[in-house]
Image (cartoon, rainbow, N blue to C red):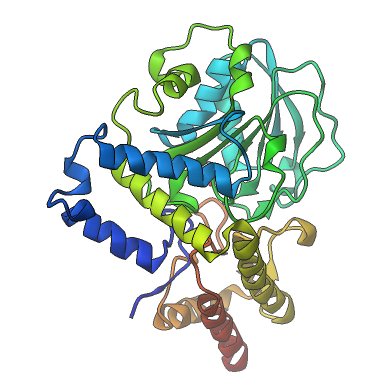
Length: 354
Ligand SMILES: *Cc1c(COP(=O)(O)O)cnc(C)c1O
């Protein structure tokens, strides 16, 4: 039996997507060739990447006259430096909500001045800062919509007069937002979209006018937009499986549908964390992520017992990030509600046996 997979990333993908992907590796489009042994410029693959692109924009309710969609290499981590290389001319503003924001800040500092507009470092990143003011004289404002490690999520985004750039690696396509507020959205595929290997960038084409620096080709948004993500060989397998996952999502009813499922899963788990006297949630209630829930056992002596119990219940991947400890339960789009129920059952069983 397949495990209940709560892995934080790379993460669970829909079973039917895995099935189609594995078939394509052997025989793609009944053409007796593998997906990964044909030219990325061949018609069948160009159709894949174009379908991927149009699904992205359709699901986010954006149009391709305003926005370009790129499938790049290097993970979200390369975007940390690429954004600054292209757009940080004098100074930029960053919201610091944890490990990933910190890494983005560290890279950006190599290219110009940086203002940490607000930070939740004072309380171990257990909340999202609010009521801060974003200066109007900066090149852009950068934030992280969902903090995969700490389990906090931005429920609202500031009104800004400067380009709004967001790392949505771990909650893209999980909830409805007004995506047209953003000038650049990026996400490593492996959290909610596909296998590791490609990074999605959705960028307002207008933003290219802000580039003043000479940027090496591979790190230049201009290059990748001009070449339709084909400046060099794209990560063909990852792009293909991401396209399949987006198609799966569209068929289900898109983001409005999956948001309802995701909310149900999160409600089920958080209400058990709050009800069960053995457990305690890590972060401010109003900032709880619907993707990554973090919590701890109040009594550490029960840890071994709990760990044995959930492993016996066919559950995978709920250990907290090595920097935080405790537990982290990732409930990405493809995770079924019954997997969360399986975990809740174990938590209740522990309460009975403790
Ligand atoms: C995982 C993650 C990253 C890093 O992604 P890579 O593709 O491994 O570089 C960046 N930001 C967030 C929010 C993440 O969850």
